[in-house]
Image (cartoon, rainbow, N blue to C red; front, top):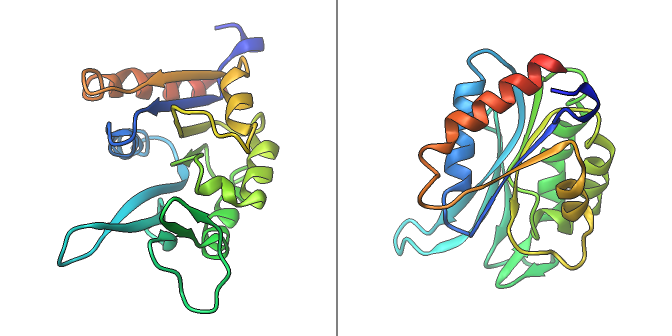
Amino acid sequence: MDLEHKHNIILLTGLPGVGKTTLLRKICDEVRVINSCQGFLTEEVRDKQSRKRIGFDAVSMSGQRCVLARDRAEKNKQMPMMGKYYIYIDDFENLVLPLIACANSKFELLVIDEIGKMELKSKKFESALYELIHKVPILATIPCTVIKDSKLIEYIKKTPKSIIYEINKNNRDVIQKDVVTCINNMLKNN
């Protein structure tokens, strides 16, 4: 592989609900056998009784958790909304920004699930990613639709250092091996 154009960003994209986060978790489990990873996954939160989705949490690779979004806000808190969800920017930034800050020195692979509308409500998160794009190897999920208020995703997709895997129901169970091989090659060359 030409060192001038080697990949340092691997993106997983696909329709909502296709299994990007599940695939990302499986990839991380396999990659962490020989490489160190840092970052976060986004998990759905469901009401225990009704099983209806009530929001999302960000969960670090070490298991720390914070509220990312809920369908109800805490009283007396001013928070941006995305659809029916209130975005807990402060909680998200308190967990995620320190994870990203140490990506340069402590870990071989930065994992981000996802670079999406909710996460990009944090301008500090967006700025931190711009700073890291060409500095550390990144494995991230991105939505398949354009986010109007952010140019970050389009920038990341178009950089020659990115490789994009489109996940669908037909390939999600077999693409894992290809992505893990790509990550291992990427980390070997960094």
